[in-house]
Length: 262
Ligand SMILES: [Zn+2]
Ligand SMILES: [Zn+2]
Image (cartoon, rainbow, N blue to C red; front, side, top):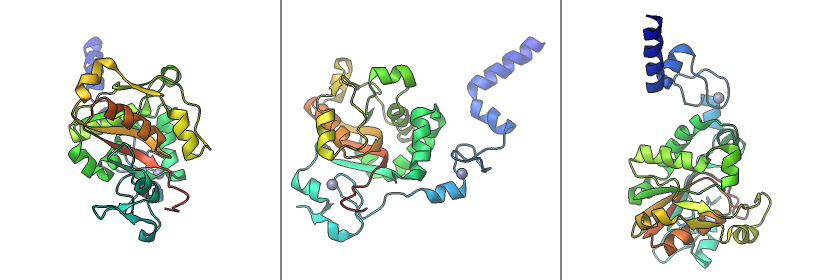
C-alpha cells in the first residue's frame, strides 16, 4: 500500500514538479523573497527595476540610442548606429530584451553561475517579446556555445537553456550543439570592442554533423548577454560561411554602447 502511494507520488513528481511545488510553497519572486501570485514570476518592485530596451535603437545591431540624433539613415531609411553604418555586421539584425544593469544581472548571473536554471523560461519570454520580428523570420535556433571546460565546471550552457526555452515558446527547432567553441576565450570584462573581436577570432566552429541543417536557413543565434557584439559577429560569420541564408541575434540583455549613452 505504502509502496503504491510512493509510486504514485513519484510518478506525479516526475510529471509535474512545478505543480506539486506550487501546492506546497507560496510562490516567491525569482529575484527577491517577496510573495508573488504565480511561480516563476517577478514581484512588482523587481519587475519595475528592469529596463526594457525600446526605440530608438539601431535597426541593425539593436544598440539603444539616447535620442534619434545619434543615428544615421541607412539606404532603406532605417536608423543605424555609426558603427553599423560604417561597416555592417555579419548578422542581419540583433535585439535584446533588457539593458544589462544591476537589475538584469540579478536575473542573469544566477542563471549563469548558480544553477538557477528556472530563470531561463521567464528570460526567454522577454526575449520572445523583444525579438518577435526576428522570430518571425527565424527557422532554426542555435545558442552561442560554451567551451567544454566551462561545461565541466558549470554543467550547462546558459545560452543553450535560453535557446531551448525560446524554441519551445516559438515552436521552432533548436540545435543546441550546432556551434562549438574550439578555444576558450579569456574573460572579456574590460576589453575594448577591437580587443574583443581579436579574442573571439577563430574561437567558433560549426559541428560537422549538423552543418547540413544550417544551409539555406535563417538562423536565430541566442546568447545571454551581448556586449560589443564581437561574439555574435564571430558566430554569425561561421554560420554564414557554412551557407546559412541569414543570421539573426537575440540576447537576454545587452550592454549599452557608452559612446551612445543609450
Ligand atoms: Zn522581487
Ligand atoms: Zn548598429
